[in-house]
Image (cartoon, rainbow over all chains, first blue to last red; front, side, top):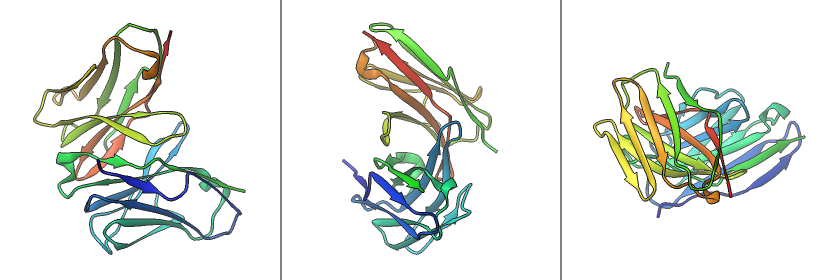
Length: 114
Length: 110
């Protein structure tokens, strides 16, 4: 089974801190994604990557950046955390030609910014 | 822009009843549709993936249909059990990206 692992289940950070959320997949998938999930707003795409060192903005990239130095790892960076970034963050991956194979999600990171 | 709607938003049924969850989308130019299950505070678990060329997919008690021309998909869960209680999300895929519905929260009472 494909595994997508997010390094932290729960995280509490202070306003203004730089925050790194890490995601690792073990099945050599080309595509990786970061979503946030909020009550009433559903899942929204922040950033995605189709290949190493490549990144594309999703629907809500403001306040975030990403890094993909290795194929298996996709990091989400909050340059200066704010309280409105308190949310559940979900990482996903899919093979190249992902439309044929669907997505696999990680367990999520619940981030609280105080 | 693709809009994905799930109705109803919440559903409560007694154990043993069949569940019917609906998903509609506005743009029929999709590559696939995926149904997920989410337990409280957890990530998403993939249930079924239907390619745009397919009409349905089945896995155990789960059956999902897809009618691209009318922009609809239905997830059927036969003989529901308390363990089926969760939020069910549908997501429409095109050009490698997924657009999600808001989900249907299901409670199966013993």
